[in-house]
Length: 342
Ligand SMILES: [Zn+2]
Ligand SMILES: [Zn+2]
Image (cartoon, rainbow, N blue to C red; front, side, top):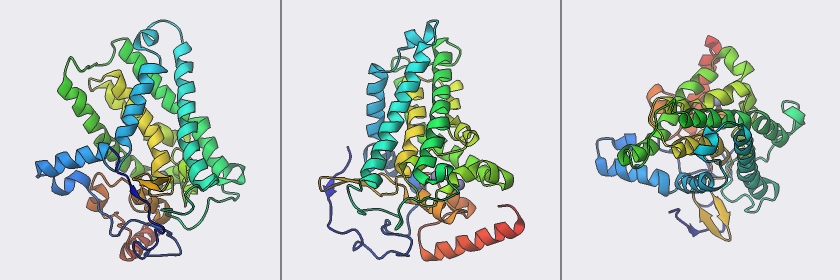
């Protein structure tokens, strides 16, 4: 399960920041990219990398456990979904609102509002912002509005639609008894589908008018917090969550669908939380914030995907956190601006 180690008294003495004006803390640079693909020919490395991505430094495995408990307790059964009536839709919507408020709200209150771990492991030197670029003139209220008004209902629509289709036998189903191998393999595949889809659609979202009218809502956040994760224009939310449509074609158990859409919706609150890890009672629980994506919010034309697939590296948009990479990405941004493609 999640590794726990003692918290050091200071996090700035671990290494010198590449730019202390921007970063209070960052992981050792250059950060790696590519995950298991760095040694895809090595089965031990690949299997270890997959296991660690679920049960090591990430909270994905923990989330799967919690979401399974929710599905077995407070979420409607497949019999209730299959029966006539729409009460179950309201039930799922309520659960999803409660989850988002607890997950993003809890992280925001702990890390930012009450600063329970001070600046320990905080990436950005600056606090959340206020200004006319934000809805209600305040970054936190802006982020909460776009998340709660649009992203949670869109998440619920995908979840309800897919579960209803499954309950009617209109999309292929699977269970542990039908194929245990596929049951496990689909969980393993989901992060790679999401990562590849995120890279491709994110490049599209940075394209000319698409950026101006849609993706700019998310990029109001130069320094990020938990509520920034799903603070998106509704069209972007619909695109971002659309990898769940693989369940229209791939045989799935309801828990695949519920986990996939719930983790896609809640995961960004952790990756955008602005801190590398949570610290409670003197213990450091790796890991939460994603420095790879935090670099995207800061330097813009880089790191469109995530560190699990090597697509940014392959297409020349990878920022490894170093000063040399900042200079290279700034040149790239200037060239794109002059070419009129950004
Ligand atoms: Zn972007
Ligand atoms: Zn983001």
